[in-house]
Amino acid sequence: MSDDNTSKRERIAEFLKQKTSQGNQYFKSKNIASELGLSARAVGQHLLILQDENPKLEIEEYANSRSTTWLIKQKSAPEATM
Image (tube, helix red, strand yellow):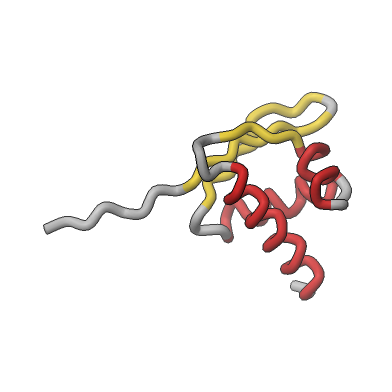
C-alpha cells in the first residue's frame, strides 16, 4: 500500500467523519471527489477499502446509477457490560 493511497483514504475518512458527526448521510462519489480534489473512481475504490479498514465508519454502497451513492454512518462505541 503506497503512502499516497493511505493519505487519500485518511483524507476521505476524516471528511466523512466530519460530515456524519450529526447523523447518517448519503454521499455520491462524485461529490466527495469534488470536495477533496480526487476522481470519483478513486473515491469509490478507497471507500471499498475503508469499508473493511475503518473502525469508526460504517460504509455501505447504497445505489449505483451514474454515480455510486454511499450510506455513511458513525459506528457506535461498544457498550460496557457490568
